[in-house]
Length: 142
Image 1: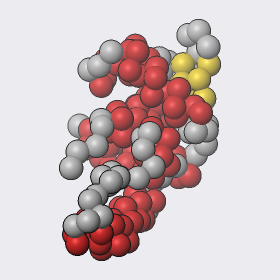
Image 2: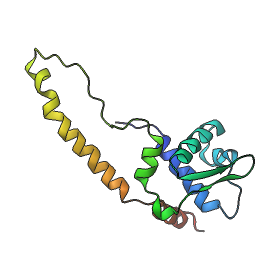
Image 3: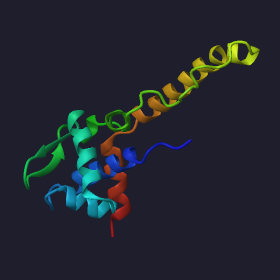
Image 4: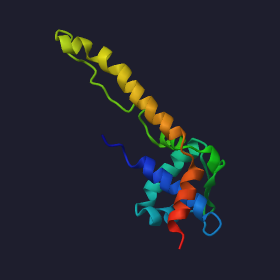
C-alpha cells in the first residue's frame, strides 16, 4: 500500500516553518528548495493546510507561519488536511452476489478494514508536530 506524498511534504513544510521561523521568511520558494520540488506543489499544500487552520499565509512576501501551537498539531491533523480520501481502503463496489464469496466479502472485510484505519489514526493522533520538531533539531545539531 502506498499513500501520496502529500503527508510527508506537508510535514516537511511544517517542520521548516517551525524550525526556521526566526531565521528566514518562509515562502513557497524557500520551502520548495528544502523539499526539492516545484513551488506550485508547495503552494497547493499550503492552501490545504491553511484551509484546515494549521498555517497562516500572508499574501505577497509575508510568508507562512503556524496558526496554532506545534503542541496542538498532530500527524493526524496534517493527514486529514492534505489527504483527499476519507477511507484508506477502496473496496470494489459490485462483487458478484451470485458468488458465495461475492455475497459475503463485505461483511467479512469491512469491519476489519475500519479497525485497521482506526488503529492507524489513533497512532497518528499521538504524534505532535512539536515532537517531530524536537527530533529533527536533535538530528541536525552539529
